[in-house]
Length: 260
Length: 260
Image 1 (tube, rainbow over the protein chains, first blue to last red):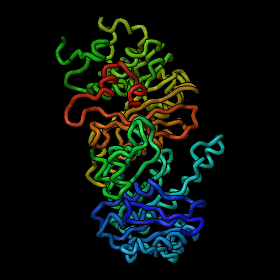
Image 2: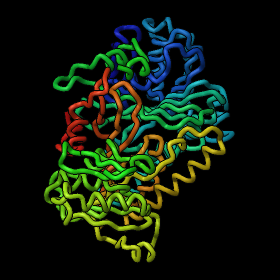
Image 3: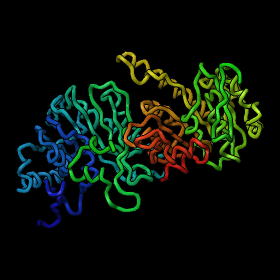
Image 4: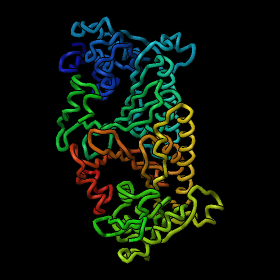
């Protein structure tokens, strides 16, 4: 064990993640839920945009045996240094040849994006957890609110512009975010992806949602659907529901679990 | 009983609705859910836009003893003829002095809207179930989809423009619609109402949502929340859940029932 890093067990020991112990974002249930967007039988190439240390990408390769290739895309060389340690860790040897790392800025566009390695039409699925400031949805003034709104419109627009460019014509995108950003996300998806399926994620059955998953297809004209909810915890304890445990342990996709 | 009309019992006999038996929209659970947006202790003036025969407005007056005045606003004189019969029916005598009817086009704007009787800042709460074509969210071509999209953008924009004009600065709006229209509704609410609370309504726990309720406040800057779901039926039968029965029977507001 190196100082300032931890090696954390995911999917009941089927993969391990090397993470910074203090600085930077530490992966948890959000990454596991995001990964669960991908069907069990997914056979293609997947990009994990803003991958951090790679938790969601590893969760996909750990659950989906037929996946061809997973590319972790991240702009922070600090976070990628942990992704590299995770990739070369002997416990993860089984997945190594299916995983690659790309240091690139997700918000690039046009030629610069292609030159950075985010090649048009080169993926079948993109997953993303666009970074948000935890204070952004509790602004303290109208001015702050307006600024945050504009900033997040720009964030989702640039991330989904990249997603739409790099997935092929039959490709899909899956993202996790906060319910408070749903308007900005729907605007950014418009004209780029269709057939939206929104899954509200509740901490408990009686509490407001803390996250949403949205999955969309590039070629689809189907109407938006709000799917059955995912409830994380039993009502009066911190125990995971069966649904959430299946996802957190990497035994089931989101689609296996939102049907009761 | 007159030919071509029915007298239907709502709220377990606390009010009755005279409805066309064949033509026109017949009120049911949608109107009861929409009415349930209004808090039990609501004390103000309420407009039911596009009221039809008045089911939602009557459901509010039946449950909320302190409500001051309810105005049914409807453009169809055919539907209003039933609202008038409902209003004068002896079974509904207790509510008569709190109810009024306004024949007006909800989509009017500016001076024409005021002249039609939809006076600026004159209500504390507006409820609405904007009319949709049942085929509009299953279009058969991209062209049809684009046309439907533009049509519904315009519909929600004009209805919410009127709602924002006629409620006072502390007023609220509650609407019921289909999940597939959520993007259009959020766009139309933007800049007019804040503090959105979205309630997904599921036929059963394992099925996609069939309706959404959105409640918003004119003066609020709070972030959008996705509230706990309302589930209408038990998983393996057509029996109402306790939640849905409380709403359909007029014993509880939506806020009483979405908390488990």
